[in-house]
Image (tube, rainbow, N blue to C red; front, side):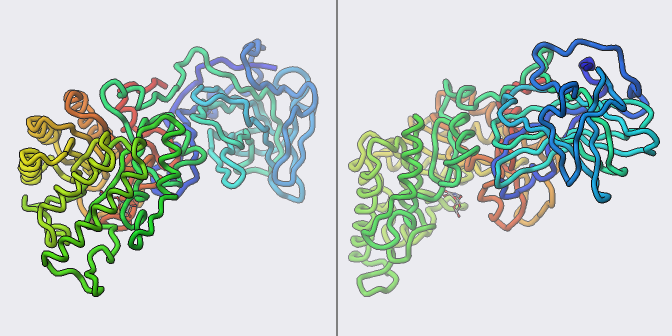
Length: 541
Ligand code: XIL
């Protein structure tokens, strides 16, 4: 048995998988493949190098001196020990096909590799005498019983003239149920010798331990993610618990979800999220009590079943419905939801109040009464007005005016939430800073409530794949934003992302259906360039 030296001869970056960058409704998979090397043909040693000791810390070391050591044939082939050729010792393993089918061989590694550790995977391959040549690949199959994916680590041309080494670095970022190493032919007639397969943790290399956002920023502000029930299980739940200290139910607390029919409250979906958060020591932002969207039509119908017109009776009925809704929903989670978006999106782009049915029927009173009702339902909860594009000067100044009016009248408002649905080009750090500084003059808390950074700068473009250059611009934008947030950490109490990872974002359907990649984790749940830009500590590889 031989163990080839590290580091590898040559390395090149390997993008995890094209699919990881696009919006596929992927199973949560958390594997980061960092870099890889294949010994280039021609530079490879075609004969056995001098024997070296296998490192004592080799996790896997199959030299086939004692049978096939757990390797199994794939694709209808066979595996058996052979003395016809050996890279080290007297034996190799011969993989043979059947009925003209190209065989492969695989070794179960489930439970053997530790997430976050860089492993060197190496194997020596050679073809039987007189075989003209083949291309062989080394890969990993990984995932869960229902969804196993293949990742090619490296491949090389192999001949009968000598041994060729395939080697790769491989880093599982989190645990999976299924993990096998696979060797299989890409071309050729499908018979080959395998020897000295090793998996060695690389002690001389930095370990890729993915930092935790909540640990990195927790001293400055809470870090949260918007989630649905689909994020509460499996890999997504693991990522959520490790990275985030707070959750916001994406839709489960909206009026359509909680009171679809008058007084017929439904809390199952929100309960699942709040229970998960409580069980895991996470905070919850309640989103949202009063909004013009995702509100059932019945709310705005008069007793005759007609759309309300602005009369005193209708205003009274509307506000009574609103207060009873707020009492029920906030009351349900009293003590368990620390912050509420009491009203959502009340400012119009031109700086006037949005002409929603709420405003048309009840004027500013809907806002004042909503805050008062929420304060009564849970006196300890922090109460926010939430809106978008608040770095935009017209909207910013309108929000400033509104909050200053409300505060002057004694309305119990504690915070301004800026959704922060931004893109790779706008807003600038200076604009974001200016809004934070202006709102601070109100003596009010501020929260970033729905952060995401679209890779599009318009409402019409559609990319089939999101190119690395866009992800680099996105990383720069996220870095700029977090630079501002850290600078103003005395003004901000939480930063919540509108989603967990790129496999599930509202921006895949809004404003039009298109692939987007707005968050810090990719569709396979692996950290993106933006993640490393934000935590500022990308491991060298
Ligand atoms: C979005 C959700 O993410 C979607 O699932 C839903 O279909 C529509 O609403 N501003 C808000 C959020 O305040 O409530 C919105 O959430 C995104 C924009």
